Image (tube, rainbow, N blue to C red):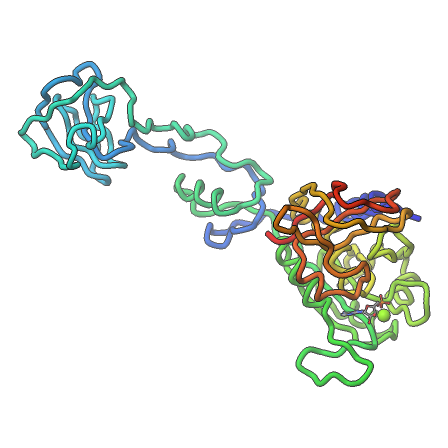
Length: 394
Ligand code: AMP
Ligand code: MG
């Protein structure tokens, strides 16, 4: 039986062989979650000029004791003035006058926090060191140096840093287009009455959401049939995509529509030593005239998501946050398989399992916070034993 690591390596190799994202330019407002395709250097110093970190008085450190005449008033947004000696009232973010080198906070001069008028005198209680409460130009980053490296995923702090540098457009990797095809004669479309023996298609929706959350563009199709011809027709009529994920029809029984349709085209199917998600298939199919990687996941709603988490999400988005925590109760596990249970943390930080191991328990999965890993070799884990968790509730 193939191990989880072996299958993950196969998926990685399949995708990296076929997936060569080109760069595209997007405005910052459309860049959330995108991956930088090239280094971005800052064209300006951050901050761009020496400015005050406090509301207070700009002074020269070597003339900062005793009585000082107030010689000016500078607000944020004013231009850079020349320092004419004494003390200059200055607001947070305002440019330090050229020649001043320190700021004395207003609270150190006036208990009431009031500024003295220009022309009057203030008295400093003690001298101040050069650089005090000055945010020096380039102290965050110097113009011409790398602000964000190629490969960086753009979240709020990264977009904020780009905006601060005056960058309005960035080069990012095109998002992979992923076609999700749910299969099964039992599938009923959302919004239609549920006939006896039918179930609603959960997987098109959950996989499309998972793929979108991981930064790809999801396209979904449902083949409510176990006829291999219907699945082939759906794939033949699809537009160009970078990856196809199918759900269902990959086991060894009868009516295995994905296997029946795609094994003759060269996809390989077999068992991976995991639970849920054991039966898996992968390979290359021609979609819209292009060789396209295909991942065939089993159909149970928990199996598709666990398959996505183990094999695809790490490639699209990187690893989930990993945490180790003690089990609240003891649990048995099939020792020949990597079992993935669903769990929650209790008030004491211990892992409670949510629902049983069965792979149809999508409602229980929806109430969980983490995937709980019980690797190959573990037949039983006792209460208090540390288990690996992947947090899925971010
Ligand atoms: P399969 O992998 O086709 O043998 O399906 C395994 C189980 O998952 C069966 O109980 C199916 O009815 C169920 N199933 C398959 N596809 C879906 C789907 N898209 N949504 C919900 N359940 C599904
Ligand atoms: Mg089926």
